[in-house]
Amino acid sequence: MYFSKKSLELPVHGQVTYLFTTPLGSETPAKFQFLNKNSGKIKIEISNENFNMSIQTEKTMPPIQINSKTGLISAKNVFYWVSLDSQHQAIKFGIGEARPETVKFSYNLLTDSPNLEQIQKTTSFDILSQNDKVISTEQPESYKKFFESFSTIKNISNIKPIKLLRDPIINPVPLKIKRIDELTMSDIAECKYLHHAFLTQTNQQLFNCISGKNFGLDDDYFPDFSKAIQHSIVTEGCWCYKKLQEKSTEFNPDKPNINETYLRITLGRNSGESPGIPYVMEIWTSNNYSPIHSHADSNAIIRVLHGSINVTLFPFLGATDA
Image (cartoon, rainbow, N blue to C red; front, side, top):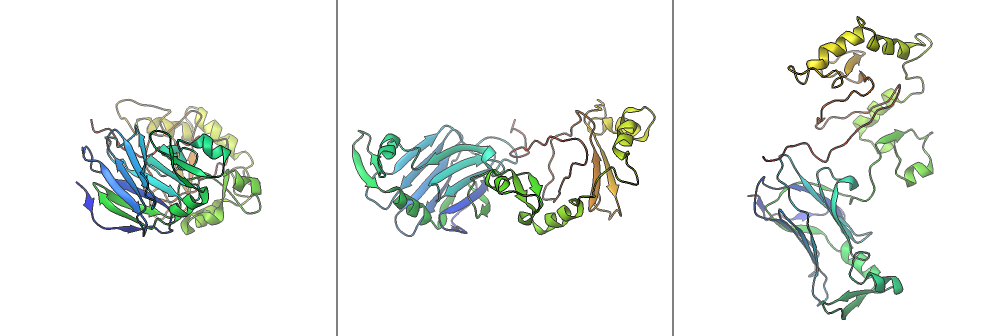
């Protein structure tokens, strides 16, 4: 069982994404609390069947109780996250990589409250008792301030903390990158593209290596390079054709699969670090794919020089306990 009495300080008051894991197969719920300096608290308990949350303001009123039929799962390498968002008075719970696509439960204090119809009629926020009597009236702005008051995570039980991210999970992180002379305001507003300045220093270096206008397959020296590659792929006896046949048993020696492979060619000086730094050209034929895999903590920038690719992201890489 994981247990920690240590408190965790939020990088910014009122907002955080808390990544953690729990013991595989444990029957004990994972628990922790967001606390402020007064008596306000957000208590979270996650079992194998439920996500339970209790929001207690400083006011002398019953806590807001929330329950969702989603919880911990029995899988190796699984991890979880909880996002606290003071700007939107929202709390989210997800499984795996922290992004909107992995959200399993989301609660907004204003829009998901039982008296939503009353909120839409007035600017006040009414807390109702079980018999629908108004027991407290607050302005929405006061709840924003209430969220902003949280500064620590305490009473951590059956949890192994992984990381605290400064920002809550709101918008998806774009997977496509544009240079400053190509980026538009709409690209940023609609979260379609990421400006390369937001990349890590290593990824900025990699991006700058391959993002030039003249970096491509077909050039003045070899204007039909892409056609030559295609010919080599489909023509028996050619280099690409033979290499793809050789690699068809790479992932399963007993069952060749010509679609489950691709070619990887190191360009420039090979520094001895697989697969070669900083340039690797990958050749994927139509309908080919790779098995589900992890790149661990590596850095990479992909530029499509010809055709198009589909990339599928998974919340985490693991297997069921069974």
